[in-house]
Length: 423
Image 1 (cartoon, rainbow, N blue to C red):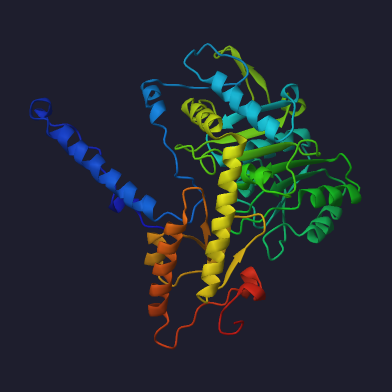
Image 2 (image 1 turned 135 degrees about the horizontal axis):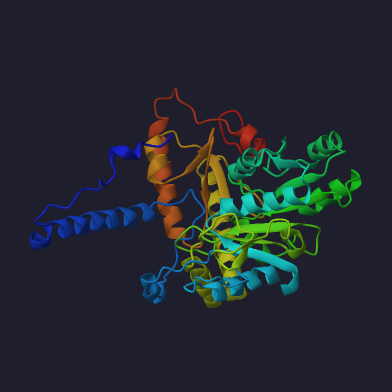
């Protein structure tokens, strides 16, 4: 577990009676903020384990921070609250609907407050379409999928995964056949959290149809990070509403690089009526999960989509994949076991022994493995800095001749493990 923040929190204190005259309170707060900013600069230099694109400049949007912009309710229907950014939100939604090949008059969606909300909404729509459906998700799905099952009190069946981290469709078929009398609601991962594995959507659909489910299924695609990257990878399988899927969600603060957490959720319009209700207080309809929604986020997304466009994103995706291969190769050259999935920029490798090193580089760890997510803001210089420090520190961890690097064969496969047994 992480450190207890209570030991380092910035306390809220009552102003002294003479604060307006002395100005001490303002000076103290300015000092705290300056200290915090320096810490952000330092932590950003050593940020590798989580999928956030830190390469952005939104100075042009600073003028909008003076307004309380709230998109509460349905993005397609104005409410009585006039300080909103629906015109930006719908423009962004149209862009994503085109990306995933769904016509304007056939989709509904909204900009969520985070990636988890997209999964909560997608699975909720599936549950409303099939109230007695069973939720199926691979063991390596994001924790929010299992949170949704608990919140909605749905029966949830976990499916085994292949070494790559993608769903094992043989195990999937065995388990859906055990419940063939009930519809299937399936979470398909477009990039798993730890290994960046992409589930084979076409094989999932084929498995459902061959198992006799035909139209008795609903597929939600969790595209958190790679849902926006995979359309720009040559020869990658398509995530498309031309296939029988029900919804897709991605995060806006990951590959796009929005400075505040947000996400995009797109579903078929035909499914949304079961969730939608009139709200007289707003003079609008609502099928979202949350009430108030950040009205600034759609503007930031709109700004980036317009600046970069398809060609800009394609260049960034190619850069990420190229740099991820560089990192994987350098790790192996240094004798460190590593794995990189074909459609991924997530490099999995042996977990560093020193937890201080893990915290310094903000690495995400699970068991004996850690990972680096190569984002557009991660360049070769930063990777070299990390690699050189890792190799140097690693030599000290095992210099006693007794300690040994962990075997990660069961996590990444024998061919990717470079422990003493598998070198």
